[in-house]
Length: 262
Image (cartoon, rainbow, N blue to C red):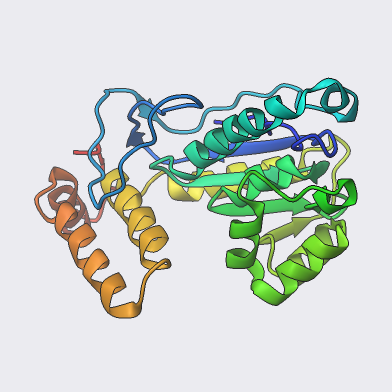
């Protein structure tokens, strides 16, 4: 699955950022901007029978550029940015692994979308940064919160204060992305790497993937003792699953497991 970057918060038009969502998982409905925020909890229970493996949707990013923002009344700015923030939060809360593939520009909102993903990969020629302070605003799609969590507070402050733009190699050096690739002739080196990673994730147990993501995300926000309790609660959700028994049987029979997300 790929999603389009929801603009650059009026700073710059974000370039091509693809989001790959992987894992044979039952995906519940996603609440988009304007819908009530999903409740936090340790449950990975979902509501629909839709099975999400790897889906791709690509289109040009059509965020608010400077000309559009210049025409926007000040009273419209807050609600506009709130909707962008809600969409990015929904992506961060997807119950499957997500991979941001950055093959071009990811500036402002484009990078905030990538930061909401579990893993980020980029071409060496890609450009990324939170550049909002150049326009006398700040990142409003989660950038001030997710960038420090990704690379540390001091370095995140430096990048936001300076509005510095990094290439793929620089982003890899500071830990902003996990993999950097030389761009290919088709201009989709990062996307191809993201698909390779997604294929590594696909064979794993769907329930385990969901609750592993839940345990990591929520555990990182609390102290170790509380985090271990979250892990215990998440682990408990896998014990009664048919997939766990299938995994043990497949190991015994020396064959690939056939997981169903049950």
